[in-house]
Image (cartoon, rainbow, N blue to C red; front, top):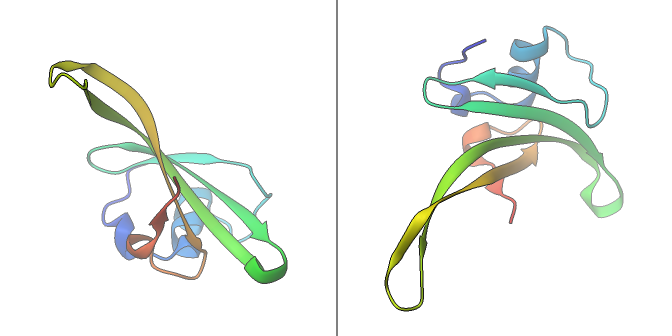
Length: 97
């Protein structure tokens, strides 16, 4: 499934577009595609100070390695992980490091 302009949707809107439902099972993930990447989306619940429903997104990325002597190494594969409240716009989510 390809979703254009996913960055303009809220976490709930994306979840509904991908799954067809507004209910979720915590930590159960689904995949979707944007024109350039394949993404994984899942929901979690926060407790205490972080109470609420959170939407998570992750995608594979390529990193270039630069060694201390300035030489360049081959690309490494990594994962970019973003998280935010499910009722916020995805484009405003913060990267989880």
